Amino acid sequence: MACQYIAANSVFHERNKHLHINCHILRNQLAKGFISTMHVSSKNQIAYLFTKLLVAFAFHHLLSKM
Image (cartoon, rainbow, N blue to C red; front, side):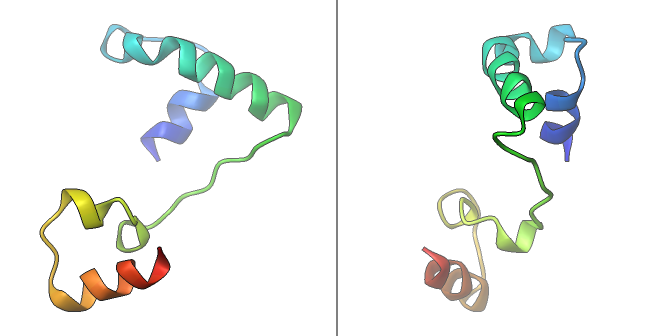
């Protein structure tokens, strides 16, 4: 949800300055209607396979989505 806020907000703060170029491109694409943002629940974050320690059920659930 933080990414959605940053993409929609035209003011950049010091803590997210390194995202300036990517967010500028993303904001233009959002404004043109080429893409839309949506919330993805943490239980459906496929990247968690590589970044989190998961119980077997969650691991196999996310693995099946790849």
